[in-house]
Image (cartoon, rainbow, N blue to C red; front, side, top):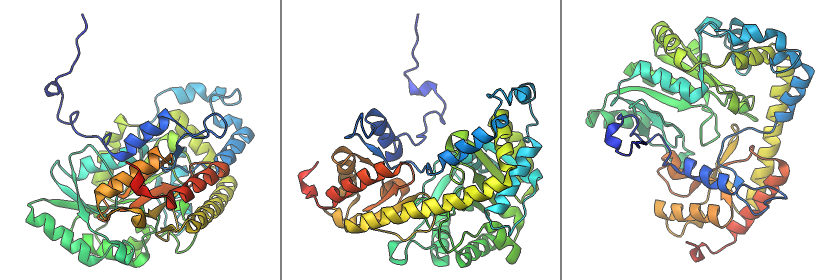
Length: 432
């Protein structure tokens, strides 16, 4: 006899929680997967421009693998390591893996900050790392302040309380906005445990400058709340101003370092999204010890650690890779921006990450989020472009969209730009 668990009351509260599947991000991914673009097999399919992937350097890593077959236990040259890799490893991570990660963290920050390999804790992706830290820092119902627009979702029960940033000053984070958000949370009897940012910003593609980071560190130190910095896009910066890590700021500004926590990963900087490598680096010993214990539930596989350690140990390759990656990102970004400008479309001026914050406010039939949703559906259903509306990122102004430019080859990008030109010249009132 077959029994089905259809009554959601039989499930836990966390199982009944929205894990993000109802957001436009997941809905458009499902739509894309049902009708994906292919230059010959499905030229009228949907082009994926919603996922923040860096596919511009795949062949560089593929070439390295061919030259270093011993880095993979799946190859004949690496098979001798199989017994060692297949066995249980130290839950803290392979020493060579942690040393390699510490080196690249220093490298992508211009060699200005050292990182202790013994303070590195791994997790399955940056989201897993972030949730692990959240479990340590806050209880369900507590809140972290987050500047808008933002792209965060977790299952911890910790709230995200908006620090409202506006297009009038290019979505800059100000002390005034931080204070207002903190006071509003206090008035609502919400306990604020910290502040969380992504640098460079997701979805803005802009680095947080030194002065703003100093303001943020001063603010959290005054309030004695935690500061969680997601720096997963650190090496995707392709033009000035250069990336500045919070780890640099705390060398310059007096603060309680127990409040500082850094997240990192290799999904964006090395284009290794599928490898699911997330890193926690906290200056708080207690948090570090707790994360080490919690990480046993979300470890990175030994094979992945072994491969990553081998690649990161080749410093000549990593130096060339990071330089070439920045060059390709800049070229692709500039090509894309120029194509949008020819269509009369502007973006927020950006200098990092793999997407643009595209301004389509002039295409709205009215300045409302309902109109934004109608435009978004038109972009997907009529022009077959998979993009994300600003409402996905809790933007307080309708008409902004995040659009990725590094998730496709050059030929597909040109097809996308042609479709965008058609979008810019169409009367949208004629579409549902």
